[in-house]
Image (tube, rainbow, N blue to C red; front, side):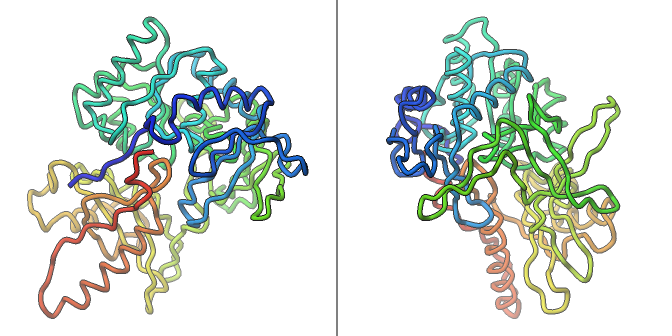
Length: 423
């Protein structure tokens, strides 16, 4: 059964009244707290811990498993909205497909509120190509002649691309922001070849969402690298007016960012054929796989794997190994027509290893390739790498125990409870 990716829904944080609560918070009437079960406007903290905060929003916790509470000022939200409008060519009508208790969905509401354009909420329920078509039609009817925008995560974009009618609807948007996790290069090529105005975004809750579009800082945002290696790759630091006030400790005390966020991501500046200098995000520093003395970049490996027509999605993780330190494991989701390259049901792992051996440094090819029906997600559709790694360990242990019985059953990855909720 396909994994259901939830969209925004009026039943929870996507309540139609959330726009009014956000407007009140931006006007200084209180703090919009989105970190509890129900969004609410609360008095500004009299102790001054997060007094200037207009919004409290939780991170997805997709790597640590422990969401942080981020305090964001009205000025940061306004700066982010202004930067987006400048980058995209002006305000417009937005389709909200993401839960607005996370930063990506919240900023869609803010862009509509501050830009004066309408926001059309996607119909409740799982994100499907046919529902996207209907939602896009409602948006067009609500704001005829207006510029149309939508924010998606890569999984949603993949579903849009899988359906001709959805692709045609998506081509009517002036911009499709895609973020939340890395978008495979092959997917971007497919989208742009289909005439979709896809804009990749990089940012986080701490920066009011995306502050780099297609690798270029927007507005007054800045991106710098610290401690670059000989290849120019270093830790990414983000600065600018869109940076949040700070993080709240467990006792409510504010841990200020002082205008900069030192990320856990690695990046490298590259100049393209168009002469534009763009930041290429290489992945999290703590996700590098140490295998046999090699530093393996799991995101680069996954990008190569998704070049295969027979692969829809891939996540590469390291699992403990007594000989190598960590073993490189690829967990892949077959495309709608699996094993298209060779036509053999047992050949997909071989295809994966072959394409990796041809395109990657020696020793980077996955030692194990596991096939599943979906990748577990959490938060705004991010792949839950911790859950994928746990699944890989359990799957490999299970296959090891069953080897003597020649058991080769396909076991699907554990479904993430949070990602199945209709947010």
